[in-house]
Length: 293
Image (cartoon, rainbow, N blue to C red; front, side, top):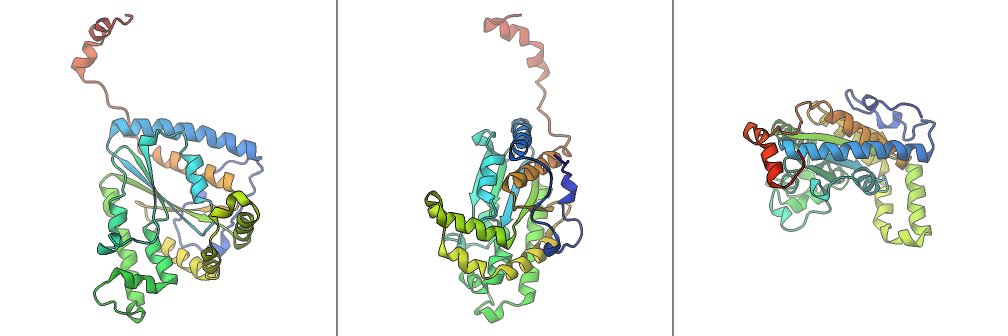
């Protein structure tokens, strides 16, 4: 199996999604990919335990991608070795009435990870510059000052919203949240095949929605707005990674490896040392409990 370098997927310069492959030729069987993922899963699980005791950082993993890009299964497989108390998954759907009474970032802010924990956003605050770009009429539900019709939603509005997202991510990063953002880069043909499988296999019928086909009609628009959002919001404090997603197993391994390697940069994450008084009396405590010297 060819080696994977996380730096190859990190967005550090302006990208064109049409020039980035959706499938990697890494010369590995599914068993090899699964074995590699298993090893990283265990490492991440151990790391989360140490993070919990260290209690100074939270980790926010943001997942975006077209329908069927594999977000749900990636979450299930990459994080399945975690202590359930150490990871929380949030799936953001159409804002409800309570959420619409606040600004669009509010529901994301209150879902941020506690110190020592991971939070995964399955669809994220970026929906507010993706779905709403394709369907600007959705913005009207936010009841914003000065926005009374779609005609009021100008390029300046989107520029401001991108700036707000950058400021949001910078603020949380400066206050101890480690942010990593992953775009699962799926080809239109692979999406077609996955949608067909949902229709052909009865056990997957529940996953299908006619709305998926309607959104598929806007494929080019979504690619355009994803590209724009990624280029304008990939920063040192909240980088984007574009992950080839036609091969689900490979995508999971790449994401897991990136998370692991990025976390290794935070060398201050260590288990706290015992208080000197407790350390000096360990033998006494063991004796009280009937332990062996």
